[in-house]
Image (cartoon, rainbow, N blue to C red; front, side, top):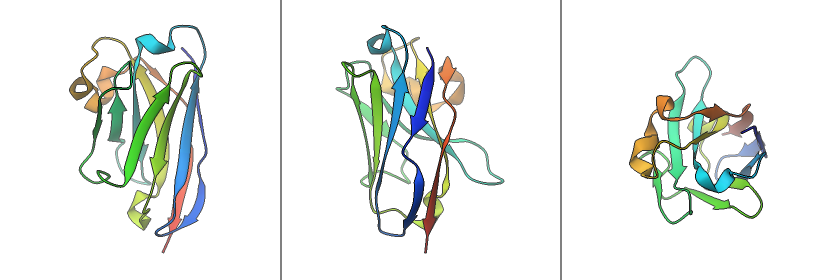
Length: 126
């Protein structure tokens, strides 16, 4: 599976962005999907994950209520809607795919994923 993330940009605090991650191949629906982010000088951290059908999702506490993950299996794409952005959301955002489990709780760890996309940069100005 090849993943390509896009949709990042520069936005003012309080604004919004929608990130997309397009996957190649015909097996997208067999993968749980996740989003991580990495701020300058910090480790990559979990943001959100969604199961194969899109029926279940989980979020990091820092983004709960502001970010929403979704997927369209017909379009081989997973989305991350970022609302009420804060300067501390500034980071490179990465999408990832994994198929070892369909439980979203399994996918809060980097090691749970099999494939990673390149990042898309989000900058939130104050």
